[in-house]
Amino acid sequence: MGSRICERLNVEFPLFAFSHCRDVVAEVSKAGGFGVLGAAGHTPESLEIELRWIDEHVGGKPYGIDLIVPTSIADKEGSVSAADLEARIPEAHKRHVENILAQNGIDTRGLWDRPISDNFGDNLREAGAAKSMEVAFNHPISLIVNALGVPPATMMRMAREHGVMVGALAGSKEHAIKHAEAGVDVVIAAGTEAGGHCGEIATLVLVPEVIRSLKEFPEVDVLAAGGIVTGTQMAACMAMGAAGAWTGSVWLTTVEAETAPAIKEKMLTATSRQTVRSRSRTGKYTRQLRSPWTDAWQEADSPDPLPMPLQGLVSGPALARIDKLAEAGDANARRLATYWVGQGVGMMNASISARSVVQEFMQEYVQTVERAAALLD
Image (cartoon, rainbow, N blue to C red; front, side, top):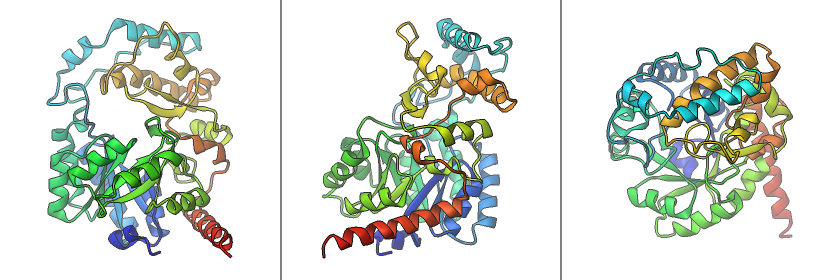
């Protein structure tokens, strides 16, 4: 394709696939797209294992990684001891979680027994994330992306030293301008339809607004994101001026995906109405499958979710137990189960291979462009 970002990253088709699954990353890149590994949940040691595997299986094709180093986070400047973290979790939040589980038939005994690590949340802070970056830059990545906020100085410096492009997600034109001023190469304009962390502005509005706001930064490419699960949507976004599409949810139901079977089953039968923006998982708004878990955090008497990363200490043990029981066939747990996914889930109705998804995107993209061109005759 003639898209500049294809030339900059040496890819055939500007379809970017964010996934926590290394198999998806490799398959998408081999099929002509660009796989991006979600690395925020990894330790430096586990990230090394994942990237080494990708290097061995991607066939020399380009790929990237995505980290989360938020601009705003509790205790941004340093770690907090496990004892201090424990003391900052209100009993009201624990009781609320226990009530949600109990009301849905889930045993709450021992829920809080797992000890908190002294370095909990360190990978969300610049110093901790730098350890993962050191690992990543020892591999042939072509792009590193920050998912929340302006990329930290360490990321920008290390990327420049290694000749790696830098990207960042933006939920508003104000965010996009800050990213561009910081020197990023790529802005991912992510609409509210997106799964995971997202803002309030719809993709159809956000993408052209961001492109217009970055006219003074012609060197910055803009990718469209948010609810994009077809080549037709991708073509429409590129008609608005986007250089390509950044996708995440569509890979969650692929054959290779790491998604738990019970969650995948819910996604395959969900409609686009069955997602919700909720702070109940991370402390920041994320779009996920709606369930009694998310509903309970929106009730009038529910406590306000804690700031990131503290909310993870409240939600983590409960969601882990729910997921484990759901996989064991517990009907109550399956009803409670939730996971990040965008509004495009309503069109994710079959589990096919990641390579097949790329091929469908390509075919639909070409058909849409040809249909649009015919309108000019």
